[in-house]
Image 1 (tube, one colour):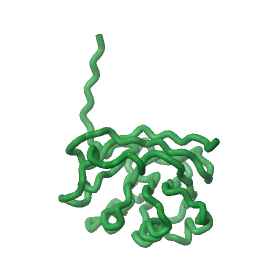
Image 2 (cartoon, rainbow, N blue to C red):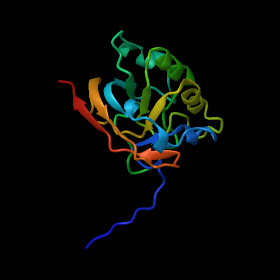
Image 3 (spheres, rainbow, N blue to C red):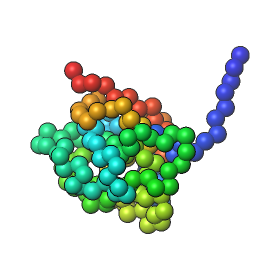
Length: 173
């Protein structure tokens, strides 16, 4: 018989942050409804855009039929074997405009929607203020821009501030 044991941060690999991560009174990951984590999405390339994904980097993919989930690809090839202190993050204004466009969930292929050195976490605060869900660190290396179905369900960790997810993109039928 084999029995494995895991000890890890819930922010390891591809993960979903809960509001509790950036708000002491926010909901834990196990309390979140799952609807935002499954359904139509759009992968948008902002590869090599610099320190922040700004609206101008993704405006080319904004159409009236924008799905309620947006996945941002900033790496040509994600550094899965090391920490990237210079990771690309999201400008808070970009997240605000995505929320205004009806987006429910935003993903970025880096470890955080905020710069690694940020103490104030302004983009995480936009997530809190606008009720957005977030995935971070989803490797999108071989994924072309376009529309897909996303399945990225967090574990029902009742008191955790995040959860690893097994993310799947499927072509739309």
